[in-house]
Image (cartoon, rainbow, N blue to C red; front, side, top):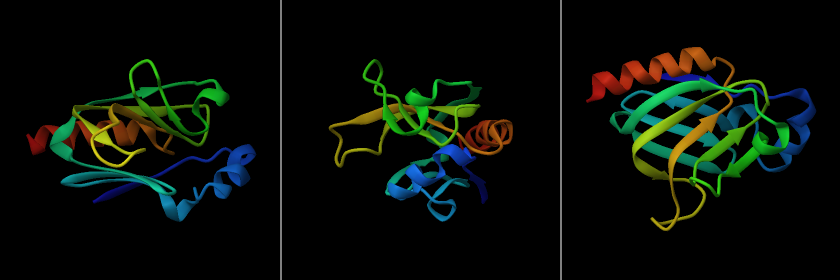
Length: 130
């Protein structure tokens, strides 16, 4: 298992802590399962559900800091900085913000400390899991 911590911009550290996002509760874990934890929000899916992972950014801070839902495509962002992150696309949409299957997400963007490392590792693990 590999764990990738989020890279938190110092300017956003306190506001993120107020919603429960701390180093102990904000990370991406990858093994047979992909687990994205962002404070109280958790995404869990088999690694084989990962269709692609790409480094993206920079972003506008008001569009990325905190949990964000794209109304255009239902994509989800868990953001802690506006520099760079990884957009993870799924074969089957995942749940995160709402219980049940009412709201699912075809992709999740995460602003981890090592975007290149996470993207490369996800592509490798997903290929092996298929």
